[in-house]
View 1 (cartoon, rainbow, N blue to C red):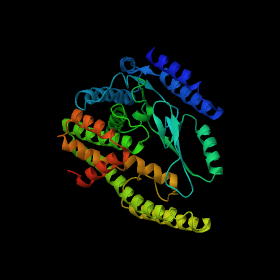
View 2: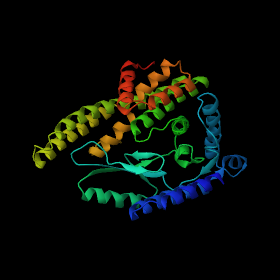
View 3: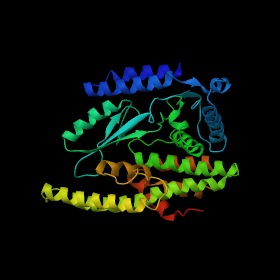
Length: 356
């Protein structure tokens, strides 16, 4: 009943919004989420059912252990999340659209009730996302659509477990559950970089503690390898975006064909650097297997999700890996003006060293 009441509340709020596009978007969002909620089967019943596939049973058992660990050891507000299970017909639960002007790295922002403005828009229908993407492309924007394995409703709903989680390896499923639960702790409107970097830090440090307590600390090496690939890619992206930002600052003085040529040269160099770097890896990196095609939207999205992870991990270390104390510090940091919290995270990031 709690879930239905919240959906009806959202419907009432949305009817007060103007514009066919707005109403259409929220209608698909609500219907998609409602469908996800109502299709769930209680995990406890599936565990009792002898017909449940052994592989799924193993992941469901792991999910409930992860819930308990998250609540007791990480101080995360688990509530009734991940108590139902949904089998999806696709590898992603939603797709996100990112749109960035041709000569900018600042994404278009969509604004929503309760959560403020965000640099992406989620769709349960790929066709709907592509329709909106076409509109932006007509206006000259760079765009990107990416599948999302899971999302958090920030505690508004009892988020279910679904096959997007259970398709992952055990350790990666555990880490993703920590990540999504972390979004229930702190959410800063209009600061995707802050929110995602914080959740990724909780994901990593939570997984480290989980493996240590299970006597499997050596398996954290795989998570560190993924993190290293992400950090190496981020370094390349930061170099490229520095060049792009310098180029785009000349947008009022340089002809468009010169701007486009310069932009393509920088992006091509980045793609080539990524290709050469990925040759040293044993699995695809953050942009997928090379060769890759990149644009402003790819880069803007990637930077937002990775920039301040070292800073948050250092802040946790500063608080003796006391997660509740760390969360209080993050909440205080989030109350600071954007420039101040960004500067604080940059200082923390400079101090961080991976403790191998």
